[in-house]
Length: 469
Ligand SMILES: [Zn+2]
Image 1: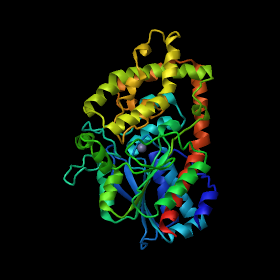
Image 2 (image 1 turned 45 degrees about the horizontal axis):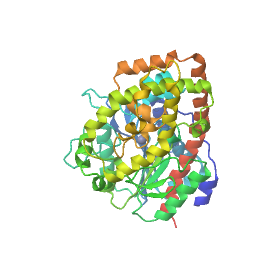
Image 3 (image 1 turned 30 degrees about the horizontal axis):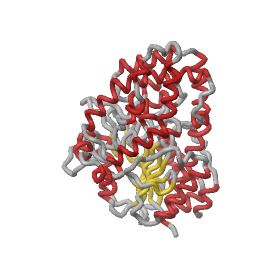
């Protein structure tokens, strides 16, 4: 099998999507049972709410090419797990894939690092129920010690750092237990393309051009908006949609006080940790939005009903910005931004904020928004508060259903979430229906089949590109 074969063939999975934790368990057990010689299923840890963290070993255990495949560290990015299940099915059921991959490689697969948050997010993701979205959107859960940390960005900064969560302890033990040649980390922003579509690779390792070209061509031929997102000034853009890694080293080089910030925030990413333990290993990080609708490619809102729902959300978005995000960010940063970062924000300001600003100006003229505080808010002011590299790069002005709002929601106490859900309910039934239809359509069109298909190709194609000549 060659790269072209992977590239040109579509494999649409018939796996039912959005499995609950118990369904995931039976799926993995069945895979193990049916592939006794090739598959070994283990529980490598338990989440704070007692759910198993599964690890599946597939393929040739004597192979010198070991691949670590992980997803769903961010609980709300539920589709990463479905993408991995699709890949597992492909590898165990399709004779061509079985021969090419399971004979020559060993895969160590963690379908979900974050089974707790995944379970909550499924409540809205399964049927795109936006009122549940406001209640159950969770990047991670708060454990009984009141600890809520980003499970992608809290790997130990130094070796003497205490590991505070069992999910991380399990991943660290796994990464320490053997040497890997490649690490594929699957993410999947919620929202539209504005939440970001991109791949990151370690451009200092071999086969750089082959990997970059493959990922770029895959994105291009799949119709992904390659130029719609910018990783920011710290990551070199290798091709549209393909970047160098956002590493702690890079952040520390560019941002003078980032060390304190990283430590305060929790630590470094799984990729940084992997790199430390496997200095020769290649890393691919995939980000593909969970849902998408072509309407969002167009900044002019023609549908009156859709505009209604956006207006309500914009209003509350602004309140949240003023009351929550800005003070939080000021506190977290308390530093003058690096000139590069500053220049980048100003560039983004012009390109991306136009949409939001225009909507706000429009709202000013209309009831019942006339009295809202939109007039007081200066959008370019908002853009100054870019949280930090590695967190919410596109967030501050991403789509209203995207990570921008969602990122804020995850910081809110339950009462505020309930309020938001109520606000959502008072939108007219028609608006709700329109928004739901648009999103459901997007989900069906993109996430359920296409994103799984594209991500499967990206992972398996990157393996072939990297390991074969
Ligand atoms: Zn993520």
